[in-house]
Amino acid sequence: MAPHSTRLRNALSAALVALACLLAPCGALAAWAAFGLADTGRYVDTVAPLAADPDIRDAVADAVGDEVVRELDTETAGAPLGPFVRDAIRSFTRTEAFRTAWEAGNRAVHDAVLHALRDDATTPGPVTVDLAPVTARVRAQLAADHMPFAHRIPVEHTEVAVVPAGEVAGLRKGYHVLDAAAFWLPLATVVLAVTGIAVAACRRRALTATGLGTALGGALLALAIAVGRRLTLADLPDRVHRPAAAAVYDALTATLRTASWLLLALGLTVALVSWLTGRLGPRREPPVPAPVPSRPSARART
Image 1: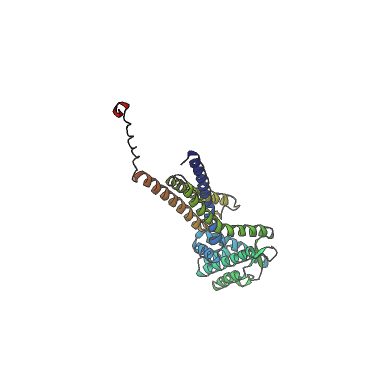
Image 2: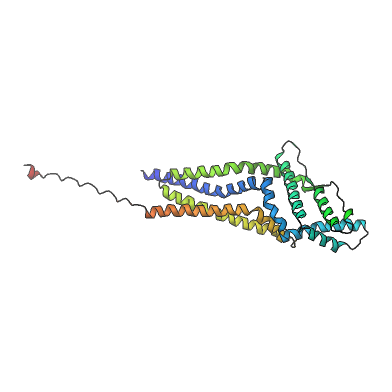
């Protein structure tokens, strides 16, 4: 094979393999967002265990307690009911009713957000959720525990905005991009990697490079998840509820972290097996050139 042709094939192979390795973590991220976060059943199954997390319970008790105390103070002329209300709500967060309310609330919010992102026929507006059923569960539990003024807790069908109207259009476009990328990016990654290995002059070396690049992509994805966690918690204004936010972040990204470690392990395994095959495989001895027959001398011809 001509040296010029070999260089062209190796250059093309390197470009295709490098592009495939760059797309691998992006494809894993898009698939996680489209098939994990964007599926209501999987989302609820992921966040359901968080109802037993102490940090989550404390954050919910503080948020609900502050709202209930504000309503009661307005109606009872500032009666000192805050400590009793918060204690009652903290006790409620340890009951089965709270776990049911937690799942119902998360399902309602997720369904509302997905409906807004997928429905292109409607004009983008704020995503709202009616949390009256959740409030009704809380009031019924407090009344059963003989909490004073529990019957005065208002249970009105008030629409609570969870996504502002100005952000819906951008989120809708981003959702459609992710939905398409979740299918095309993994497919493009496989096609580019296979093509890059096929056109290489030395396929074993290209396979080793593909494995190492895939492992590097998985490591970078794991690093991005850790950096994202740090930045997300740093942007929160309330330091008290950061442990709760960390628990939610860890639960939602658990599948993505697993995918990053799988990419790392798969890439290293492929690279190691390819390298060992080249080192330990049978080596071909260079062909021995055939002896050139000697021409008879002029004296012998005579």
